[in-house]
Length: 103
Image (tube, rainbow, N blue to C red; front, side):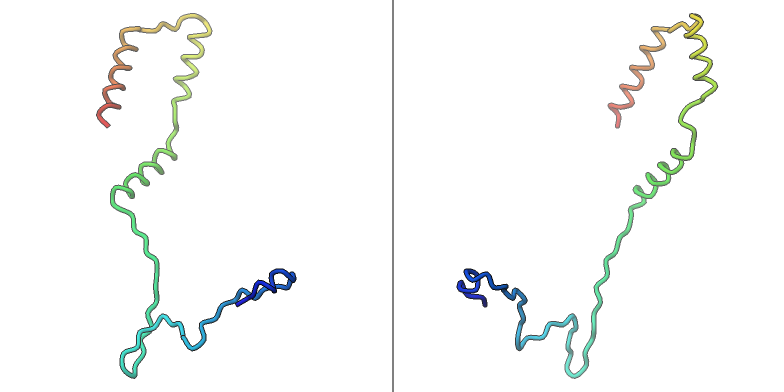
């Protein structure tokens, strides 16, 4: 163990510790025979997690929107022919709110 004098003099301190007289091993001794054990880490996913992963991959591979429909709506807005059905919009908003509450 380093003494306080080593710290004051600026000398490097050996911080390596050794356990003399003690051997460290990951083996189990049984009489004269020795059985070595090896530790391994394991990981498994639940069926629900696998299903979510599959849905995620499926959604990533699909188109997110109908570009033809978007172009038609843009054209209708640009020429003033796009009309919003307020009752249908309100019904859809309420439907989605009910769906979110059910989650």
